[in-house]
Image (cartoon, one colour):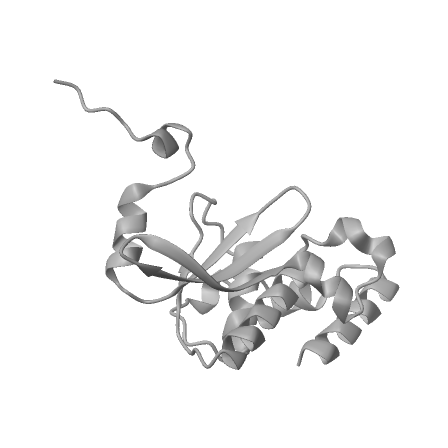
Length: 163
């Protein structure tokens, strides 16, 4: 008798073993997903396998904090990922929550990537979350020192508004 795989596993959308491990911990999760244009970060609680989104933020929300619309195509960069994590962390604190674990799903685990820039933003927003400093991108990448001068100024302006 052969075992039938679940549909989402066949489509390579869900790793059920990893999901079960995260759910058994009973700690709320920070779910980070990448799209072609944006980053999505959500604070999720699960009850009996049913996920409930408590707080959700996308990198597009930075437009409300002073991100210039002419740089709409750069809403998935490392500095934007950091600011998105910081914004999510602030919103989590408003809801009086303090701890979480990171759920990156099937995204490749690469040190210094956008996913870990989101994590760095959450850690800087004082969310209690397990992490390894070695995985974070360098401070130069997070602050946008590799980008044009006007983009750096915009990043600093948005960073001030999010604090």
